[in-house]
Image (cartoon, rainbow, N blue to C red):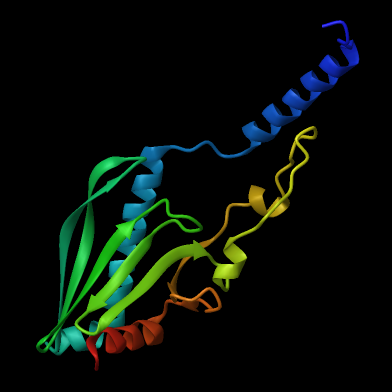
Length: 188
């Protein structure tokens, strides 16, 4: 106690004010809003998929059915989410949400067929590979950390196919990549 210096306390108060200011500039988490965003993105994904398959659906060659699945996540508890089943002749492909609030993404959906599974993740449009999703940073505990410009900007979230390997590159979801994934998981 004898070594107390008012200057140390003044520095401490300044650091706390800077940290408070930085934390207030970051968007506050709202579980209900996040869940609604996720469910909206799932519905939009299924709409896109039906669009990719539209010519086959109109000809009666492909059937798409929307169902529901029950998911449980720490931030929201139990909720119901849409799922899709695609029937192409004797083959069935399921499009199943895995969850949201996953590391580095706003959610993941698996496209599962008799020959395997393809994974879609809702990730930052600027992210091209898994290596870009991890960053190591050494922070000086005596100085408040200021969020970078990239951290303050709201990313554009897009669906991309992700591979099992860290060295893989992500592939944007579009009609061609989706049809290719269905072929792969169906052993077509």
